[in-house]
Amino acid sequence: MRAVLGAVGCAILSAPKQRAERLTGSDAVHLGTALELYQASALVHDDLMDSADTRRGLPAAHRVFARNHEARGWLGRPQTFGANGAILLGDLLLSLAGEEMSALAPSRASSQTRSAVRYARAAFDAMTTEVALGQFLDVRSENLPLPWDREPGAAARRMHDDALSVVRHKAARYSVRHPLLIGALLAGLDPSGPT
Image (cartoon, rainbow, N blue to C red):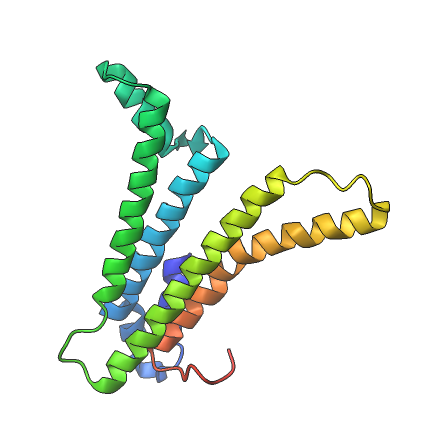
């Protein structure tokens, strides 16, 4: 979904006759790849933090690493190896996402294209920062005590607001808004205009 929305962003400012080309052009492909690699990175890290057994019906990455360790009779604890492997896999996927974003601007590109890519890269980096903040808010919310000392309505509002903050930062904007915005910035959207 993120890759498709990124491609739509790349094409949204194009004349109707050029939209098909922009939807499948190299900017859309690199951006879509970067978004999907970043998503995979976030899921690997999230599954580890949540101690999830599965992701989309398959064993979570940290569980696969642990099972491989155990099956091969390696030294050390399988769970530690699984956690370490998942952290590194998530980091590798994040690095690959950055490489895809770096592939957007060839050195021979016009200054206008290089500027568009610079704005798009800044938006991509802001997205990854926001998701990391959302992940921290999620972890924090799991560890906060329930607000039993408050009036029930106030407690419910605080819990509701905390949950929405996690969703906004961790999923909502990076699933829809950011892919569209980054694609549109690549297409030449004025970053100082309304978003």
